[in-house]
Length: 513
Image (cartoon, rainbow, N blue to C red; front, side, top):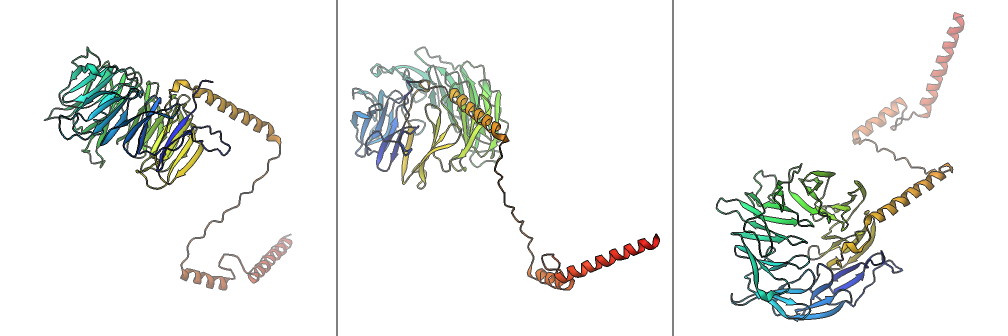
């Protein structure tokens, strides 16, 4: 496809960030070429659509860059900022400052095009579940935030209208907007005074229903992880309990639940092995999901939208799943405290494409075109052996570069629809393999070089010193050396005995005649 964009990689080390040209590397030495001068910063992040990215400078300035030209389009000087976030389409920059009084609005939403303050509010503190404070759908068509006992919605184009609608949910502790379309929101309610915890799905918009369209209740639940599919029809929920009553796991107990927005399915995903749920990922089509689960060696299973198993990928030291953006290839890996084994599967043809290893990986991500898989060992998780590795879709290593200190590496986001289908590449590779096999078959009549394989001598069994001494005495008495071979005298005497015996047998035979 001639209009396919080029791949780019953002790399941040101790000196700052730089953007590389992505593979295939056109340089003569096979190395990536930088597209900009290195910029000193403490953190960077792309918008979800890849149109812009932000960089927090060492002096506290927050700069917004245009991803195409890599030029700075806006900068914000906000004092005492402790957290920043760029919206999915790069329209807004969200900042959090430590507040001294409740009257001080310490969460600010800035328009990145105009530099104006679009909205502000007060938030006492932030956690992983409460930041960013204002959440956007991937297309920025919907915006909402979590408040006490309710989820509040805004007009994402005009925040001056204030809260446009709200969903009242007593005890709500976390929420997650569905992906495009942003038609639903999932909420988690903690277990209180004997009442079970629950996950509920509500419709979004002004006419938001007061009753959930789907609901799942459970006891012994301390936290949840939401995973919406593409298309916003199904929700996977990993329910975490701090204590495992069976005492089989120190890290508590996890269960995987599946809910559909229309309420037709609410229940556990049928996993065939006991143990934790290490990872669960929807394919980009939203029609199937993969789960790696169970005590090591973990199992890997692919399910359809009705929770029916489609494919078993066996067992191994795995805890990570990564679908490529085209949804056809799945990388099953074991990172973190596992050895780094990776296997690459073609889910459509149900065959393994290849395997490799990427030890100490902290980051793992497919390129937007689905042809390259990047892994990286980064600080501060790992203080040594920092580096980047890039693999082809079949697991063969394409590139490697080590760093003294590497903090961040990520692909520039692009829409997968802008690239060719991976199936075309798979067909071309398969045809090359077949042609290679035919050429080898045609030349099979030619004489092939014989490779001699050296024989390895089997090590002898251990003998203590006294046994060796006894063997030497026995060899001296019987005329046999310690290795079991007879001496020259013993061989001569043996030959005489055999000749004498043969002569006697011949004489007896003539007398009988």
